[in-house]
Image (tube, rainbow, N blue to C red; front, side):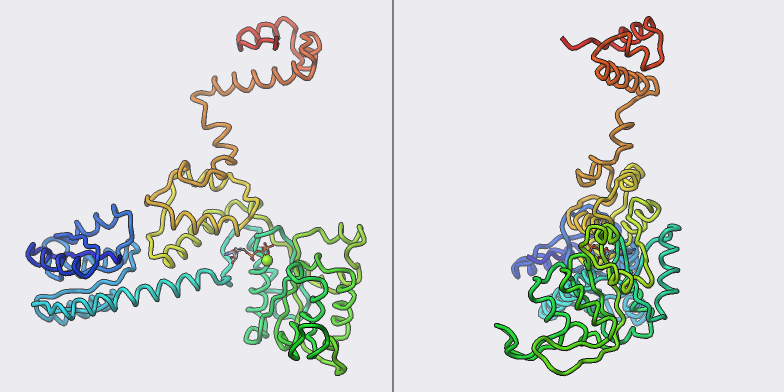
Length: 451
Ligand SMILES: Nc1ncnc2c1ncn2[C@@H]1O[C@H](COP(=O)(O)OP(=O)(O)OP(=O)(O)O)[C@@H](O)[C@H]1O
Ligand SMILES: [Mg+2]
């Protein structure tokens, strides 16, 4: 059920409009001033789909209220109601993105039509924003030294046609780096074609890469160009290259050497102009050592090797990325961006991010969808995050240095006792303590041998 907020200082108008809208299956909330509208929105736990806003209000007027809403990051459509057409107000409100104007006395049919349009429009806009937010961006966020170096290397490598091999952990941004290289190259207007070598069954990979002719194998019902041909003039991004079989590697190597190949089942030689960028999260040198990856192909592919550092090596980027993703998803879902307390920020920065930027992006999406608060504290973060924020776990529970020191000493002595089979003499030796001192400490810290 769409939710509408009516903001008007005249009780009779609020009442009439609310009744009519409720009859039409809207859920209605009302406010008698701009200030109260804003505070109700901030308290509201569900999304408001549209606002009917009177221009003449005590306190903040309609235009000021609209400006305030936009400033706070609310993007729902606002239909402005004015007592009599005032051009000045209309211009200002339009600039602030008012959806439409209605004049008093209100024509109820027009109210209904305008409202329905506004909500439909907003829905489409949001769907569009969701789609856009899900597209891989070519904006690379992060100003840490490691990211700056990477961006500089990308800028240097992009204009050449040199083959780039991108190394980095899963989710660290390898594909994004590949797209950046393409976008900053002279091939930017030509296709960027991606092929995930791990996702394609061995027996199909050749036909995927080089295409095939009708009838060349079962299910080959059409002549089909492969990725190399699709990428002609542009860039071919070979992802997860370590997952290609040795057989396929040999064929890719030949295609790279000659820049020509045949479609599966074809006789003609196809010649293409393709820049190849490849990526893997595996250690290729190890793969070569183990005989799983061809060394000659490795040298062909990695004319320019680039490494995307894992997120934990650039903690300076974590908050910037978090805010970047949160803003994107807030726009997409019609929610307000959320903020973090400093404890939450510390937890975000202390976490190791095994899933790297992708994990951070997923968490940002989830927080935007699920959070009811404007500012999140550490406890509002996903369990894995506070669970694994070591600083929080280690230090959060102590109330004084003394308590922390005692706890540490107790654990350390217990560990050493355990290592030495609870033999006091040996333990004292290991700890470089006098035997009597160890006794004293054990008593003081209430350490007892297990019975
Ligand atoms: N520096 C960054 N700024 C903005 N977005 C980023 C950044 N790094 C990564 N992303 C985003 O994070 C997500 C994961 O990145 P990407 O797909 O490039 O990682 P990957 O290294 O290719 O991962 P995988 O090994 O799992 O394929 C994508 O949505 C990407 O747009
Ligand atoms: Mg990838």
